Length: 145
Image (cartoon, rainbow, N blue to C red; front, side, top):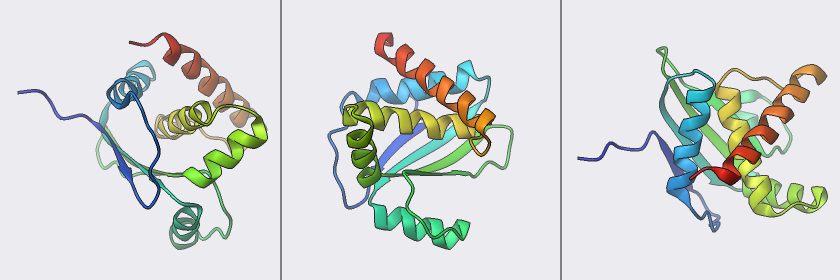
C-alpha cells in the first residue's frame, strides 16, 4: 500500500492551475531532507487576500495583507505545519516583479517550507539568506524529476 503524502494542498475560494502536484509535493519533502528537518505533515492552503488578512488579524494581531502565513504546529521533533498562501498577493507580486505567476507561486511555497526549516526573514541578513535559499530551490526544482 503506498504511503500517504506528507504534503497536502487545499483550496479555499480560489482555484489555481497547480500542475505537477505530485512532483511539487516530492520536492517539498526534499527541501526538508536537504535541510535535515524531519517532516511529519505540511498542509498548504491556497486562499484569498481577505482570508489571509483574517488569519493575520486573528492569530498574529497584524492588520495588513501578506502573501503567506506559516504556522509551525509541531509538538515533536518532526515538523507539522500549515501554510496559508494568498493567491491574490501571489498574482500581484508576480505582476510587480515581472515574473510568471508559477515562479512566484513556487517561491512562496518554498518560502513557507523554509520557515518551517528554521529560516527567518525579519532582519536584512535573515531576509538575504531566505532569498538565497528560495533561489537555490527554484533552480533545483527545474531539474527535479
